[in-house]
Length: 231
Image 1 (cartoon, rainbow, N blue to C red):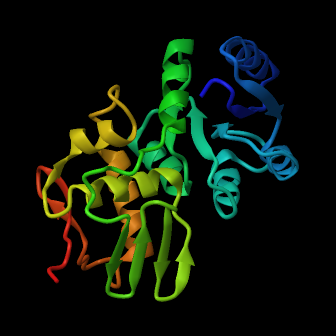
Image 2 (image 1 turned 30 degrees about the horizontal axis):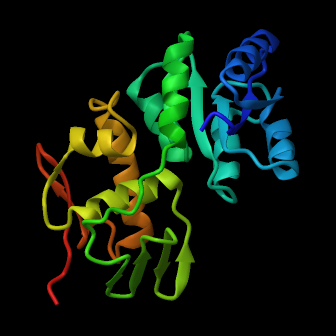
């Protein structure tokens, strides 16, 4: 997807210049912004496919900008930061980011992360139906829409991909590594904290009682399982 539009958001001019040159050489169309506020303005004015968003900026920080973007947009978001603690990763993912890259990074790593964030799972031919009906829940795998009790529920693209893959393997435990590689790509496998955050968000949006899930179940020490009710 080298024709994708990417918005680079960073308060450091040198980083913006380097990213513009590196990504433009790969065929991406690049726009940049110096702050979270400017990023929101540019996103309203022009469609973007992915945002590279610095976590630590003056004014509106990256986390708040990410939350505001996620409230209205399904654009892919990669958070950039100099910090590499698990709590920082969880904060970024919980705010709505699809991925997290620690500075300094090399161009090959960044390009691989961009490719992973832009990829989308096709509807599996092994899935028994393109629409799954549960108690008060409709999950349409073709249109990527979720309706809960008559109300449309917004899922981020990666949240939907996680849900779709679990449904495609309903009633079967899916190991952490297999789920990560299916949704993010073959370079992933150890980022279990990603799954914890995404599963938690899915339960909040879909489960009648998120603390006592009926559908998205944890398989201790293994991974997760989508429990399809018997008809």
